[in-house]
Length: 131
Image 1 (cartoon, rainbow, N blue to C red):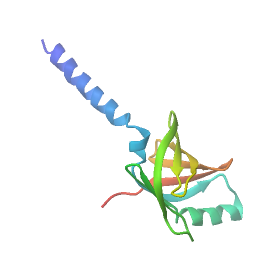
Image 2 (image 1 turned 180 degrees about the vertical axis):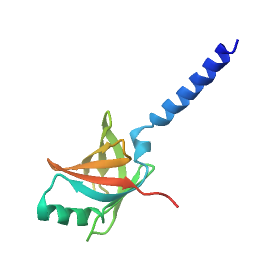
Image 3 (image 1 turned 90 degrees about the horizontal axis):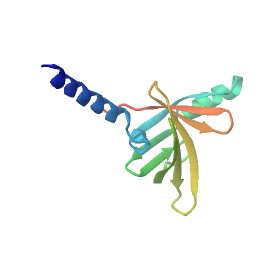
């Protein structure tokens, strides 16, 4: 008697949770991401890189992005998701004067966004909380 209504409720809850987890990469990128650390370096390089990354910031709003890095003026432009492979996403940043740059990011289960820089260095960024 209660089996059918209960199964419909469970099916509805399952569908809602799947929809929340299945957000598109472009939607998952939205917001402000602040650098917190660098993986893959050692010694003096690690300390310098960690200092640099803490001043690095990405802000994604719609298809607009603003990138801020230490000792540079923030740069804004448009972006598009160029490729998706599981939790990895390649983003194409379009330059206002023409041309583009590609960056590879990976969404981690702990809420961080990992930005692949070079062969071994990975910059970690954590989404800033909105007040």
